[in-house]
Length: 120
Length: 111
Image (tube, rainbow over all chains, first blue to last red; front, side, top):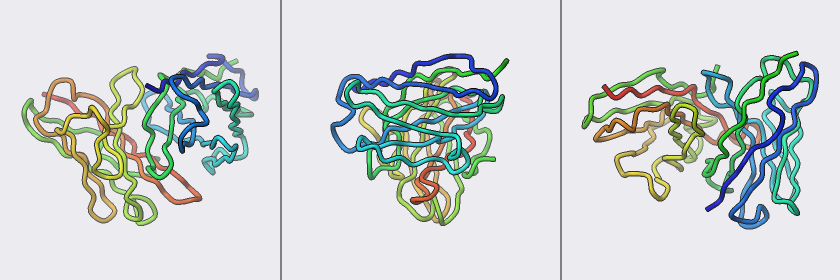
């Protein structure tokens, strides 16, 4: 059973960079045909896809965040990461990592989510 | 504002059926057979309950069913149970520029 777990600071100051890591367990991040994604959800609001990475390192980002987002993968540690720069209060949200099987358009496994608050 | 339109709320009594709609465009829902539905209980991560319009992952009860007509997808929950009370989100693949879009979510109340 694949499990994903987000980790990182829960509080980030405005204008700084938000950095989160997702650790994948129960299987190799390199096995199978998957993309590894980040999704966020502001309190009381809907879901927003941030971006994805393949195990070969190919990335795709939400066009509204593209200028501030970097997603990377470290297959040796079975982790992938999110960096979101120049954050403001509107970036406050629960951030989820999730697995996207290629050719399905869906997210079949999710992390439990981590709340990141942007505040001075 | 979400790319896909869902009603903010829906309700039904135990044992009844409820259908939740998800309206997009020909560039997402209408253009691909990659509509998914997620169930989210308070404080929990979303859970995939329908993928590729009508397929159910292993372990999801067959009380949950999906369909699509044109630019509108639908999730039907039959034989409502108390544990079905949750938020439901649709999503769709939207091509190689936008990739994926979500609906704003529907809060399902079991009366």
